[in-house]
Image (cartoon, rainbow, N blue to C red; front, side, top):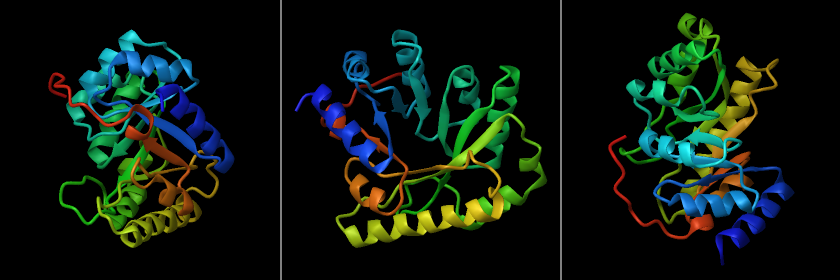
Amino acid sequence: MSITDNITRLKSEMDTVNVTLVAVSKTKPVEDLQIAYDAGQRIFGENQVQELMEKYDQLPKDIEWHLIGHLQTNKVKYIAPFIAMIQSVDSLKLLQEINKHALKHNRVIDCLLEVYIADEDTKFGLGFDEVIELLRSEEFAALKNIRIRGLMGIATNTASEKQVKEEFYELDSFFDGLSQAYFKHDDHFDTLSMGMSSDYKIAIEQGSTMVRLGSTIFGERVIKHWKNN
């Protein structure tokens, strides 16, 4: 199926379950993103700052760009003027840096706390206890130019649907607990970003409100060597 057909089908599918679709466009040429845009897609997710900036310069300005890959603190300044959401916040230090640059641009930047749920050493993210420690800290309370919208998690890359389901279930339960304990009067804490092309249907069953799909939209990735992030 074409990119247009895939977008049309997926947007209809997501509307039915009230889930937001993020088109993961890393390594994809601008032409492919334009096709998805023309089909009605407005939220795109990128892993690397350099690639994100190049695409931002070339594509329509009503696109909501999400940074979904690991973000180094020294790269925040480049995306702070325009980024819609940073999904991969994995430390207080990074939050403080985002807050600093958001303030410079008179913005409040939406963020998701990335939680480590996978049984893999290569994944980034905060532990459940680290999230609670962060939210309880005076340093976090002082940040006025970031807004925590929810959580993001990446399940283990495994053929075991049972394991993936359990990991997503744990994150959904944790999200609900945080919502009651720390965000009870905050209507903005509403996003649980779980699920990629290989497991998004399981994620939706387990409570995901946002999925990040790449190959399901654009086809299998062809690796392009962008400049260093």
